[in-house]
Amino acid sequence: MTTIIYIALILMAFGMLLSFIRFVKGPNTADRTVALDTLTTIGTAALVLLGYMFHRYIYVDVALIYAVLGFIGVIVIARYLEGAL
Amino acid sequence: MSAMEIIGAILLLIGSAFLFLGGLGIYRMPDTYNRLQAGTKATTLGAMSLILGVGFLEPSWMIKTLIIIIFIAYSNPISSHALARANYKRKHFPLILHGDVKEMDAYREVTEKEENKEEKK
Amino acid sequence: MKQLTLKEKAERFIINWVFLMLVWLMFTKTFFWQEVVVGAVTTMLISLASVPLFTCCTIKIFSPVRIFWIFYYFWVFLAALIMANFDVARRVLTPSLPINPGIVKFKTKLKTPFAKMVLANSITLTPGTLSVDIIGDTFYIHWIDVKTTDPDKAFKDIAEPFEKVLLKIF
Image (cartoon, rainbow over all chains, first blue to last red; front, side, top):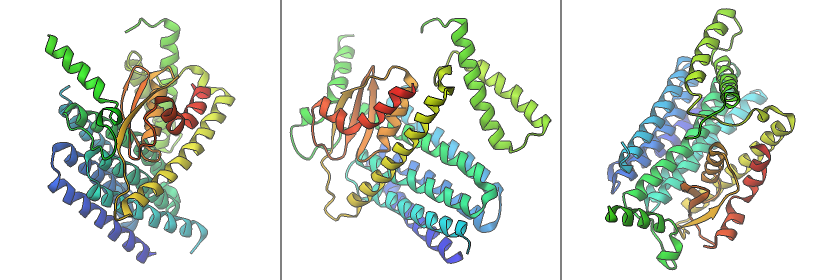
């Protein structure tokens, strides 16, 4: 079981690394925001998995709040780019 | 290992593989809209599958994991939709590889109409 | 914004209250009376405040036929989501990136804003499509592999299986 969790965590770490490269490189703000959105989603999943690994139930609540805040952040940035804010 | 654990482990592996593919899609695709396509779809199913896998491994967490799954499935498409529209309003037009630009980009007419309105004012 | 009658207001209030209360019960995972009373009061205040802002559907949503169609829609949607992911995986892993992007438009027959939002979300999560904007009843869709620019044919390819079911629900 531990091996499977480690494999999953390594795959997710590579996904986060690739989207982080896009976050640094991205030609314009929208590209960076797309990368940020992906990072948030992968981070939510990683928090739930780490909570299972360490047997901490509170991590699941943290993941839920993180998902909500990431969603609101992306929406706010999108509204700002659109010029509606 | 019980049956629940095996299902959970398979879901974990599928989920993390799709999360990795989402990151790879974000890195490889040539313009913002295609990045949104790859990023949104792959990470949505990846996160849903991985969190459901944890729910199978730890059945007492099932209800809260289901709430997170519903929230992700509801919010990810909305944020990508908002980003796509904002990006178009900033005049970053999509990449067109084949065919006539006017014909392949049906949204251009809307933004042009808005521009004409503003010029008249 | 059009003026709401008292009946419509009551309908919106009850539906919002029921859904919020369901979410509250899922969060707390208990039927202990103090928790339920606190939840009932809080969700009642929130749904009272959101009456002029938001509605998802009419009270007809609770009829058994419609609940059956909601379940059916769930499976249609899940199948499309899994298909979409294998499609993305194939495109991302092919070294030459087989894409032919463009934006197409089509018209929908759905009326209520919430139904349009569900259709737009489903389109975003299905193979190779991403909804960019909705103006009135026209959808503008970014398509990663454009097969046709004709609105009717694009509608058949992208939205028909979802819209058929959504028309039965809403």
